[in-house]
Amino acid sequence: MSRRSALVLLVAVVLLGLVGWMCLSQASEAAEMRHHIQELHQQKKELLRENDQLTYDIARLASVERLEKRARELGYVTVRQAHFVLVAYPLQDETTPNEAMAVAQSNSAEHATSSATPDWWQAVTEQFEAWAQTEQP
Image 1 (tube, one colour):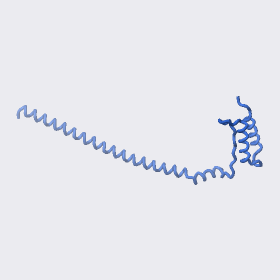
Image 2 (cartoon, helix red, strand yellow):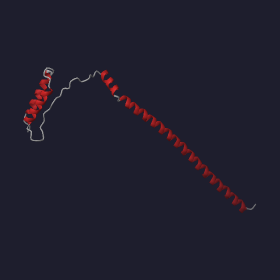
Image 3 (cartoon, helix red, strand yellow):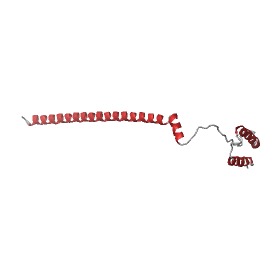
Image 4 (cartoon, helix red, strand yellow):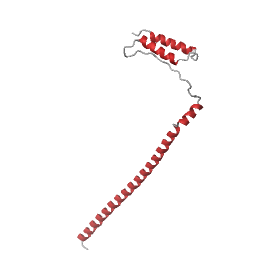
């Protein structure tokens, strides 16, 4: 065998080795990517399941029956009669402060329960009414 044919044979073997190495590295990379994609799909399934469980837990914890039960455990009771506190404040239209106070007092008379109002609350409302009737600069 001549030197030239040996050199050609050596170059051919090296080139075939390089091509084979490139094919194997590409196949290895593709296998790694498939494995990574499978892991991501599994992680997605787990996150979706966890999200569904959290949604269920939120719905269960926010149910009216559970909230009512918890409120009773904390000592809250059902409101039988609502009491309103009406506050007179300066209106933007032509109404004067005295007219607004008269309207507020007439509205509060409709909602008031004179025998059920504690003395301290009466004192607070009188102080507030006196404050509201003072002239503003």
